[in-house]
Length: 304
Image (cartoon, rainbow, N blue to C red; front, side):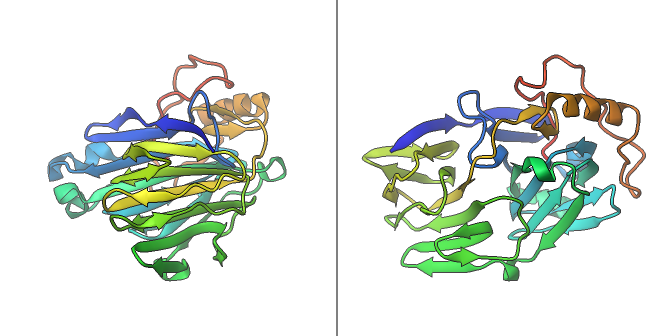
């Protein structure tokens, strides 16, 4: 059965860069290991304003960020020295582990023209045993990601396993993450392999048990539920979930199973112990004013 419906909230990251924030939600902090989800775009700005949208270097610990684009492009730079142009259909999986800093720059004005830029950002919390792993970044091309098609259904496995599909995207715990496109009238279901399962309507609308749900809503289902999902119009869904990891604390860009580790991360960023990207080290996001305890909700934060 349906457990909860999450309504995306509006958040502004930069001039012209508004996002729909889905996770965390006060009544549902996580779905499986997924602890954060933003949907940005479609974004259209004047070329001379593209720099104002840049996400300056900022830190992470205790999680993996996953960047997935529907359109446009973004340039990623991190403290490992990685520089990667992120394009639609790729999976860009950055594991922060013990600490990493990265930036996201919108350096091609053409990629913003006409509302071309649209992307989903998620954070995947790490198991306790992996929270202090060395940071890493991996880029996976679309041809590395299996696609399944059926009448009125197109589906790409972004990570994990679902519906018998697997790929080589490196994950740290059992999960699934899917990009699904449905024609009007197409029927679809949820994978049954995992305990916690959520479905975000990125475009269009669906009907489940006689009720219509639209863009900007996430449906989270109880374990064992087997809903029939029917597209009311051409629809794009993002399906995600997996096995729960236990309680996690989140403050700004930091995630950890321990409050004291988040306090350490604050000090590390403030004192410069988390390095900046070597090719993007002239500016950065300062540590926000501490207005909440780590157990509280996240402060306004960068896209990833």
